[in-house]
Amino acid sequence: MLKHVMTVYGYGYDIDAIAYDVDKSEDEVLGMIQHFKDINSKSGRNYSDELQSLIISRYNSGISVFMIEKELGVGKGVVKRLLLKQGIDVPKTKKQKNKETYAVIDHQDFSICPDCNGRNVKDMNKLYIDEGTDKNSKKKKLKPHSYCFDCGTEWYQKGSETHKVLFHELNDDDED
Ligand SMILES: [Zn+2]
Image 1 (spheres, rainbow, N blue to C red):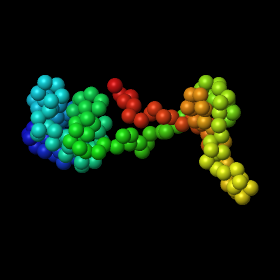
Image 2 (cartoon, rainbow, N blue to C red):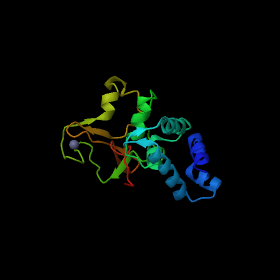
Image 3 (cartoon, rainbow, N blue to C red):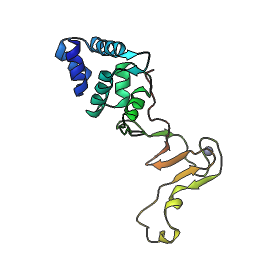
Image 4 (cartoon, rainbow, N blue to C red):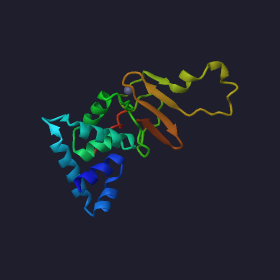
């Protein structure tokens, strides 16, 4: 059964699909996968060829590095390094679809930084739009959008809310 589980794991089946297939719970399936990893690891991170090709196969079937690391119960970056070593191009930061890239903040001032209260703030609209085109762009009303040169905070108006751009939300592992 382990062989079958690992085969379909390599095909990119979801864990719940594998569990259904072999009539086990998802935890049991994960346990089998992690057991397979353990018996195929010689001293820590030295994986057998079989395990390496399995990981590559799963990644190539569309499962994210992050997910594979969780499934195998290995540390952050282990699978990524393995793939890079094999010459597989892993995107640096893949934005997760349903992850917010901003936070709503209670701050309506676009000349003072909401984070450091600094005034070394630039209007992002002016950084991108040539002054000369201002008269012609009347219909395109620009929304306030500022950037703090002191701490790198960026915030903008969105409807009635002020949104602060988040830079550090990617790859955050909030379940550990
Ligand atoms: Zn600031």
